[in-house]
Length: 280
Length: 248
Image 1 (cartoon, one colour):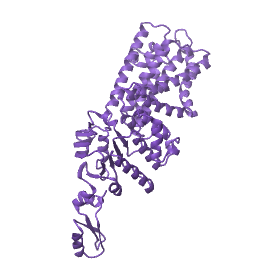
Image 2: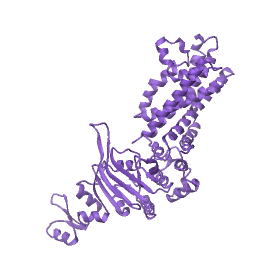
Image 3: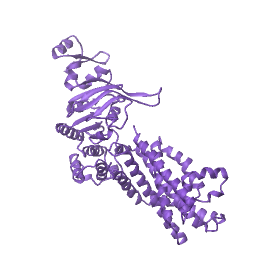
Image 4: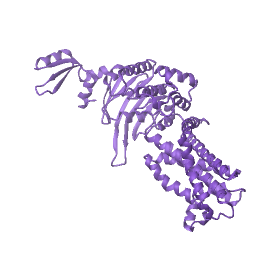
């Protein structure tokens, strides 16, 4: 279980501080794949940093796997795996050496076998002795995922796990994440890719300016703002959208409009635009 | 607490060190500054300096070992830690692991000590080449180990406090460089002006230079040993505390 209550995080000196997370509250049940969406600067990465004990909260409470982030960070560290947004692999070490150090730090038993297993999961078996600085961006992301899986974590945090990956590798990532979710482990991921959240997440939270503006299943969120959208192009070339609760309402709205128009099912992006007035 | 939890931190540094070691540039850069000092002072200017009847090269060599071990233990740790925190983000891997701050500290300090001891070994070998002899006593070894330990610990402190890589040069210019020249490496401390001598007497390298040249433990040696131990304990505690307080 992950419980976040009135979480606040600000940076900088008093009087000139920037509030990154502002009274955030939510709860994630074990075994859930949870997606945190929001525009740049919404506070997603800061929230992940607090949950993974990398940043101290400025206020409120946060517990992961039943342990408080400020009172018992060591117990949380034993139970989580983290794929950070920025590559923090040792560039001058090989893939194997990176995993070896991580495994020793986390006291993984049967480490050599485990390293082979995780490298196989991310299809990097043949590159185990290669130095990381010779890896492509996609290979580095895969190695970060392998590293996070090395400890069989109860909770896996993925901060923009597929950013910059080509579609083929992204699909491979999705399969791995889906499998982790099916194993009953909790996954918390941030993403800019709407289709990624729709494909993987049981629950989705939308953040804007440090606050949670919506928290529900993908289906629930669509219902909240309307399951159908009527898109129309105005005479001056602008796109206008009308959110409708069902198909009948969409047909009715469309009948009163002129010009090019489309009726379609709503997407998470529509939900975001409706709730925050901004594009993801 | 697992008594070996420092080992992965140390191992990481050693794996990186091994790779650097095989680059010609590393060995050259570790040796070039002490060699310049040895030639300039030991074989040049030093001939005019009276160091109580002994040969100046014999006086200078232990000082160069102390200075070089200080520079290498300190600089490697402070520079690597700053880069790992701010640019490469690899320090996150340590703080996200279930190991204690003192274990991270110990791993970093031991790694810094190895680098300092390695640089010292190069000077000792050079000393053999130049003079055909190099006397190492028990006090020499104790002083050398303590010196590496405390300056590697100071390196962690700087690495944890520096806000950018440029900051480490600033700390270096204010603390390490003056110590290299004023703390008894090149000339005995009692030749310095009285006011400067008082300040210098409080600095750790001064006491390393006193202890490293002792052949028997007298009162002065005991004081220097005590000062070095105090510095080691204080720097280690501050470094561990800074790691404990680390938050991004």
